[in-house]
Image (cartoon, rainbow, N blue to C red; front, side, top):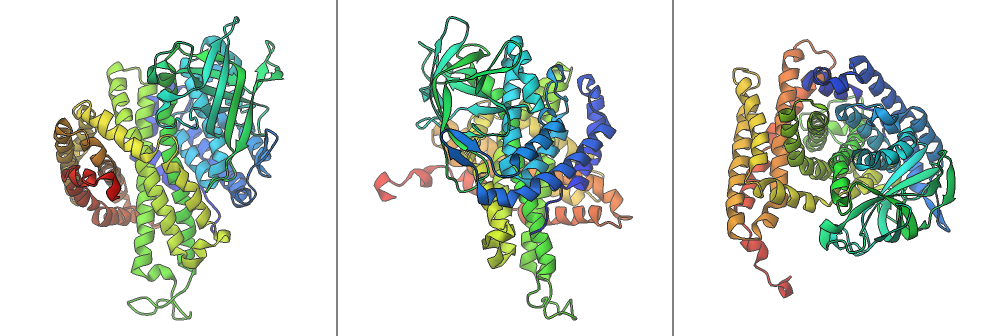
Length: 596
């Protein structure tokens, strides 16, 4: 198996050449004071060293060992505590955090690249900083000044970790039916009682304290989602001087035995009158939680890219080294008994599909991160509102499409290895197992598709879609005279028109039948994702084409050839998806229950 290497060249290409991130950052004063090109480059370089040199070497052995639970205590795999300290000492936990409380204030476009490196190197470990960052986002946006001053500095530094406690045994997607209760005390605190499941890194030994953000219901709260509140519940109480006090009244009842990410602790957390503090307003907990959801769901999409990148690196190395049979055009390595398998068209199909989705997915995640940065840091209210609409529209696509293609890519990498891909020591089967969860947590991909189709498309009659369509149409129009781009723009324009027609068609179907949204949603998200990735591939072609002539490294020429493969072999999938969506819901709903 290839040693994971951070794809820094491609990340720099996207940030500096395709999206011109330095110019965007310089245009927003609140970002300009924190980041410049030299700082960003230094962060990427150091992140590459840490993820490739510290986190990646732990990945396989940690998967073999897993976490251990004993009487409520969780022991992380060997090397994780030391690796966590390396992350802490480098300030990586607070990379995107609020500088007022000790964070570095870096833009998401840059933070996303670090997140991909960390997830590609060691996904199970990477979940710990990811969950802390999510908890910090919600606390920073909705917590009182007192709570922020008391907890955020140590969370940004990594001295304390964070966890998000949403799911219950009977309540996953439908959080409105949670049973965890919060009873008010006399000192502005609350007593939290209930059970939460699937809590990633809810208990561990890497940080001295773990700050849980817990969804619970107040007495006499309204029924359903409008009756949920958010509470900060620390593992150890924090004294007035900042020191740690007694242990709070909750514990880890067990950890799950899982298909993948075995080196992370997925905990059952039992709250028995634990002391907590309200974050935000009463009964507005879901709004507070969703502050971090756009970031976390993009983060899960990035996990898919990270795993796919690791799979691609190993599969590419294996295909160049493994010899089997001769090329269809005749022997290529006459001094050897056979040719490397990379000469075979089907192996190239797999590798190019992987490369297309990895590099296209990385570009798309950077594109979404750009809108997150504008929505957060722009001083222009109209620009910020526009960006918020783009974030709302694109987030479910980033989460679902990138993780679906991430698993596809991990499976293709396993297939390149043949029988060796099924054997643990080569690492590909772990990537398949680890990547699988990304399609499930932070809202299953089916739920993401329903969110896109129902809330983001049908509910507003396609108004959010028009924001994206206008962005793509503007790019097509602005580059219509570019002869090199023209073949790509023609295919992109046809795909965009196809997506627009299907969007209008489903809106009409939904007005006539309640099942239309659910029947169309998953295929629609795939259709949208393929079109969106085609758009960012066209943007990459625009940059790469003028530089390809003098390219001796193969980077720019490789971009152009991969883009051609994507447009020739993958984008046409939009045609069959569109036809399936147009067929409506009748055949899907025709069977009686007993006919299944």
